Length: 123
Image (cartoon, rainbow, N blue to C red; front, side, top):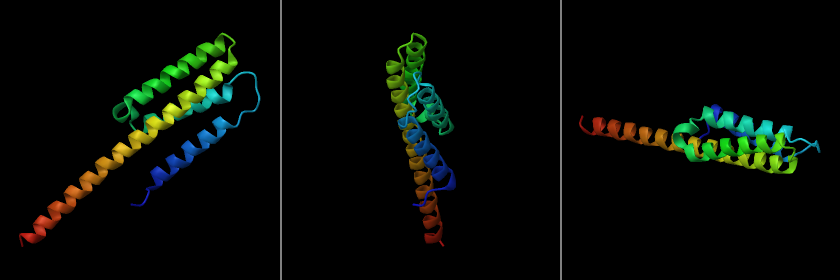
């Protein structure tokens, strides 16, 4: 099965987020890590993660809130760790939602093919 442009673009974007999240600039505050986590959550939402991966999405949101709290308290290492975990959970939510939507599309195509075959067979 060929990837659609939307899926390829999403994959590229998620990969870019992951790379940016992994390359820290040594800043004392985990600003880039938290921004990457927020972006990953946004991408997950575009794939309907609330419907198809609600547990993973909720986990990502919770960890991001914990990261924000840790950063506000000055615990930058804990904030960075939580932000990276939030990003990973959001990427997982995106991938799971994308996978579920793809499975649904495959089922719809299979049903269409079966209907067409039945129509051709009844002629």
